Image (cartoon, rainbow, N blue to C red):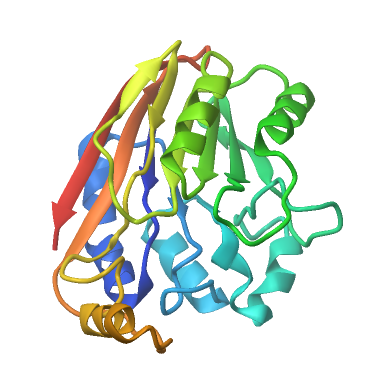
Length: 256
């Protein structure tokens, strides 16, 4: 099974890049299933029905997310719809709208996708992602499983990856928008600290660089505007066997 995981898609320029790159990439690499972190789809924060449908039509099968999934209030009810393939972090407290994992049919195989969020540096009171993973794995049993661990601290990501090693097919980091170069397979589990973003290259995390630099210089909060220009598309391509063992993880980076 070949799985493509696309890093945080930031705003309209990134969506346009995905539409240009993804269909050909799926054909070229014979990708079986595409996952993307979608929490930044709509103007950098949150998701709308329109942006969701736009990206689904481009070839994305499932979206994971993180803390920004709640930014567009009108989309929250859609998280309860099982026909909408968007996961929110599974370790939000009971009663939170939506679901944190789902099992998909990929050809003749099954694939579990899990969305989890770290706790270091986040101003939210979340359940333990390590223990939540244990609960989910006990519930779903043995099958190919990919986890998007949406977290800030590389130490927490690394610890989680090693905790999950040998029990999931892939533990993929997201959130920082900066790609790391530590991809590896550990105990049959593919790992990377952060896939990076799909967003404007000449920017600060996809946002207009002038606004962010001014914010650091003056310490005055300002409205974030999505940058314009060339887009970098960051993803990882995974190869997983029928027993759920990762055989390969490879970074994919294209400029458009």
